[in-house]
Length: 139
Image 1 (cartoon, rainbow, N blue to C red):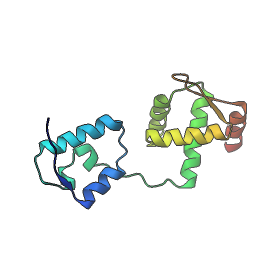
Image 2 (cartoon, rainbow, N blue to C red; image 1 turned 45 degrees about the vertical axis):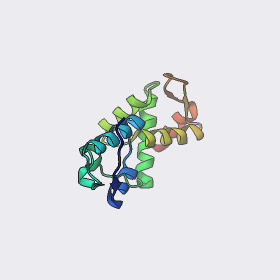
Image 3 (cartoon, one colour; image 1 turned 180 degrees about the vertical axis):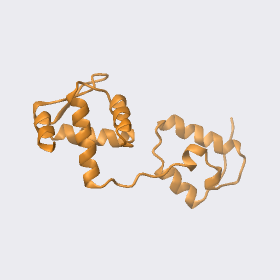
Image 4 (cartoon, one colour; image 1 turned 90 degrees about the vertical axis):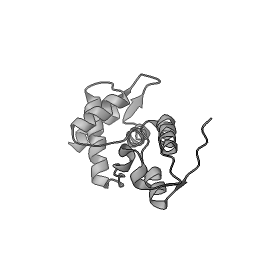
């Protein structure tokens, strides 16, 4: 078994903490293995994989942008039930860059407001009557 021993600089730690980890634990494991294979005692930010090194952390979006994202989510869901990946793709096509965790948060807020229902498993999310009314009020 490979024993990995290295130290991360403060800048490197910060980049790793701010990265969104879209691949979850598998991506983290691959990153650690990648760093271990470099056989460096100190890992600088430039030693990180390109995807992490080039990552620009999302700043907290302005309230108006959140409202726009929620409005676009309501518009997409007005056309029919839709899963998270499809919602993320459609938002991307509309110019909104939203991570999966941000999308989940937005959907939870819409669900808490009673504007959407979420199915179990692959059921997707769908607009409620209250959500349709909220969308009409926003337009």
